[in-house]
Amino acid sequence: MSTREEIIGRTVEFDGKPHPVELLRPEAFAGVQIVLSSTPSSVSKEFSPIAAKAGAIVVDNSSAWRMDPDVPLVVPEVNAHALKNIPK
Image (cartoon, rainbow, N blue to C red; front, top):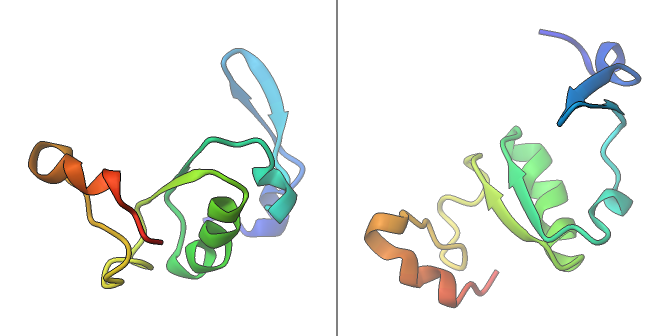
């Protein structure tokens, strides 16, 4: 596994375009509509609220919010209606 220092500054290609890897900052969520997050719980607990406050819908794959009664666990085939009212 690479360390953060080894990854920052690398370039990854997406949709045929190069993108530099940067340290995650709160400003990164400005204008973002949807965040698909698969990070360690500590990162999700720090940055998911920031992304939501910036106006993004956050879909998180970590265990950070699994037991929070204000964050619905949504399985579209079972309870897609839970997306209509997300308190947190």
